[in-house]
Length: 146
Image 1 (cartoon, rainbow, N blue to C red):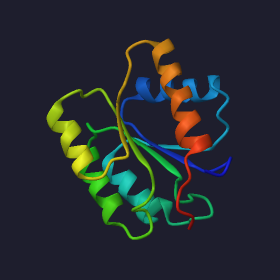
Image 2: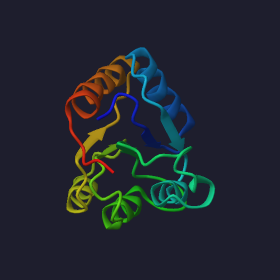
Image 3: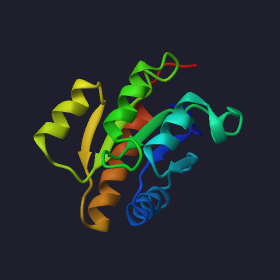
């Protein structure tokens, strides 16, 4: 992934989003992070429509961190839209959610999620998780170019 590629954070919980963004900053991740708070906004971002129509301002992300329990459209519905989208279908999607239910895990992988991570409770554990995300998904992983 290019050093400054955009990361899309799809998270409706303000506290969780703030902690994730804090962990990114603490880990020294300089990639721009765009956060949207509901499933419909995530779909607009992925499709480049509505308030996200200007791709110069809102480039297709190189990594999507996707919560499952979202208002307006669930994370699984958003994941299906991503995988059905010709341009975005190869974008790595990491599910980052509080759900540890086998049914959610299975459905996410059935829809071609790249990884499924359960949000840790402690700040230190979240920091460790973000550092692992950075090492693999940001620094080492290669994605299909535009």
